[in-house]
Amino acid sequence: MYRDARYIITGLVIFVGLMTFPFWSNAGRAAPAPAPNLDTPAIRQLPAKQCIEATQYMRAYHMQLLNDWRTQVVRDGKEIYVASDGKQYTMSLENTCFQCHSNKAEFCDQCHTYAGVEPDCWSCHIEPKENK
Image: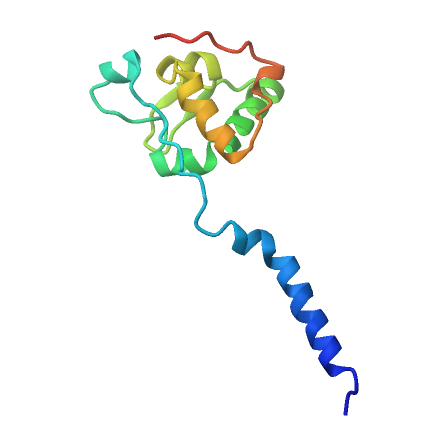
């Protein structure tokens, strides 16, 4: 029926092999996920180790939360965040987040480097000095 079928099939096998090479050649070589360090003086003093929202929420949506805070503070003049548990926090990276997470290199940078993400926080904010 198709005189050149063997050439077409061979070409398709080579094409699929080349297109999937990056996936199967790196199978099982993924770098281990980082474990951010939560051992800071402020966190040690907390009676309950809890962020402004649940840990899973903060892992998944912290950047969206920070972007929402930026918009609300800069454009709407709103400065208080009401968490899902009803507690109120000042919407401030420096005065809220970095009070507990004072170890930027071990907390922020570790995950951002792993994910290949470069946040633009420091285009407006002053990068915090490490508190040990």
